[in-house]
Figure 1: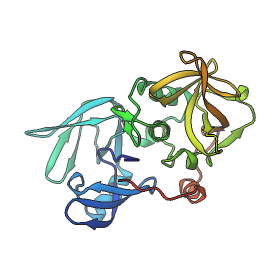
Figure 2: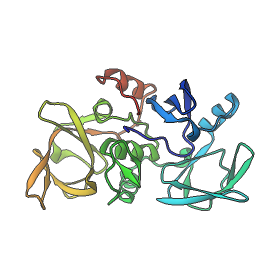
Figure 3: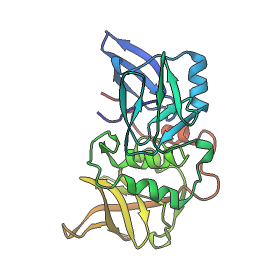
Figure 4: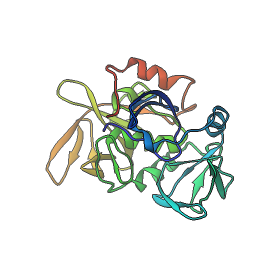
Length: 260
């Protein structure tokens, strides 16, 4: 597994293989992969377009949506399609959501909001391909935090690094900037969110906070550097995204990723 679809996220069906597997393209970041067919619910073309425009994000770490005779657990970042502030409809069912939610048009793209969302993921276990508080990887954490802040991001760190404006020195970084880290081959493989006081929040074993300097991430418990810093990028300065920026970043990234 290298990614997940959360409740309410839209995807385009590309291919089916037997009765069990469906190849899809995520509608908002163009990520392509295979999902279990019984995890998908069909919507009409008109619903697809409307749900892209009219929805809210759940800001609750864990919550349930209530139908008439059953409930469904959802996690932070799940989308509530056609949400009117109290309930929404999928197929023949009406669901009630009583937790905290935010509509995209009401999001304030500020460092304070980014850090508030990021800290909610603290201590979430690391899961390769995860995008939820039940398990998340480093680029999945970045993608979800900035998605909830209204800034679309690609799925992989080596795609995300093409966005934003470079910060010359880590000492000039600001809270909410993204630090990217490279492996010994020079490939971008890790990322984290800059915090005040020379700290970084990232997913390594679990979502944690460590010290950062111009060398990289220093783990005090292990008494060593665990990640080598490559570059710091600023996403929150001015207009967060130009149209098509995610697609451009994906084109620049090397390799093709699929979900298995």
